[in-house]
Length: 276
Figure 1 (cartoon, one colour):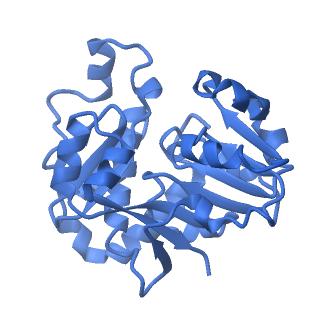
Figure 2: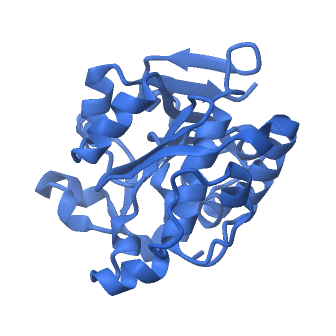
């Protein structure tokens, strides 16, 4: 899925805008940092959001002229009305990324313990009973997860990854090329999907490959949006983040900070939103 937002994102955005109501008219983009690992925003109400930066999509041509075509210099993002960002076209990877990270920031106001079942300060694997997990599918090579899972005797696992070079020699037995995702995921009982699939616009397609009744977990800082529509599409948990200090978060992203640095600094907190 390379064009448009995707049905799940569109429906999530519609639901979020209804929740915001008239309040959204006053919101502006106060600050944005497009870092090499993650992009972050701070809105005029103080809320913050982060999302994976899809570097390959943004820098397909790797030149200043191609990036200028993505975002004209005469139209700065800072100070834009949030409504204009959300209602604008999404004909490029950059415009989709900005809309996605703003959506995560807007969602933070509504992802609260009085609305959802939330487990803080836990990893996605903490939510999985490995004795009952069956065949595990992992979209994106989560290195800490791989280290833990490959130590499980007789683990039945498929790791779907675009870049096999990120896998170690003893992990290649789990490797599945991205073009074979359909066959791999359709046979998995537990599926862990990187939130980066929301940034590269492949999530709808991947969820369509999962079998009914599979235990599907979406994980990573990008998986921090309003969860309702995802819950309707076979997802049991969103393992994202709560941005505690937007300004410090953006400062770190501007210095090429990644997820580990953000967690260790206390700028963001692990937040697992569970269905039911």
